[in-house]
Image 1 (tube, rainbow, N blue to C red):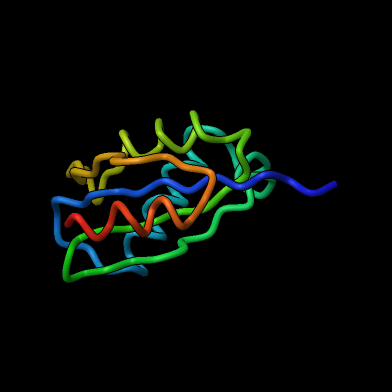
Image 2 (tube, rainbow, N blue to C red):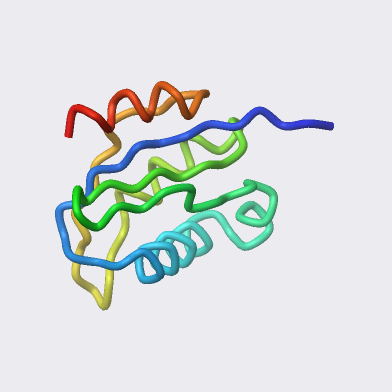
Length: 102
């Protein structure tokens, strides 16, 4: 069965690199919803831009609420990481158009 994909465009307000951000997001998701749900979600850090402080994540469409919750609870060593969901879309093209406005 082929799953539909969703993309979320995130605006980051704290200094983290791509590896750190991916590790923190995975850890937060697993703490909230478990490793089995994470493995079934099809997560991928699709794009990360340090210059504009923008990240795009891709996952299966059934997990959009879970990823929004995980983004809200992101923290690094007890300090909250500020991130905001700018846009959720089913196509990467729409996300790319929105990035141009940053």
